[in-house]
Length: 139
Image 1 (cartoon, rainbow, N blue to C red):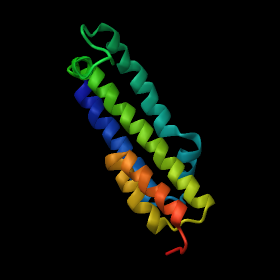
Image 2: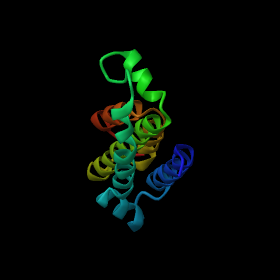
Image 3: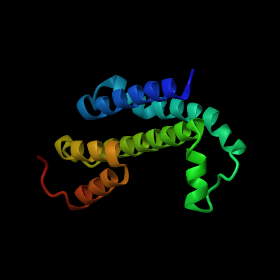
């Protein structure tokens, strides 16, 4: 399969997982996926396969923005970078769900955090940290 095809597949898988977190967070299948980290594990396997291309990129590295740009000019490494984001953002989403359930934070307050985490990773994490620290009333 090409990186373009894999990109479409991993996006669909991640989107489905995010929808389950947002809409069906208490469903036993969703809880199983969270507890076993099934989707991030699958994404991790895909990442490991595609990151091997990193070693063949001339001028690529992490010491300058130009080196990082060189890395991401390669579709395989770009795909690996995207899958990295998908996996880690989902792990943050999982931790938000678990923390909110443990602390009895209303899911209505968690939904914007999950959407932000899906779209803008650290922004959703930050919002959840603010909500959980300042929560006084459940909606």
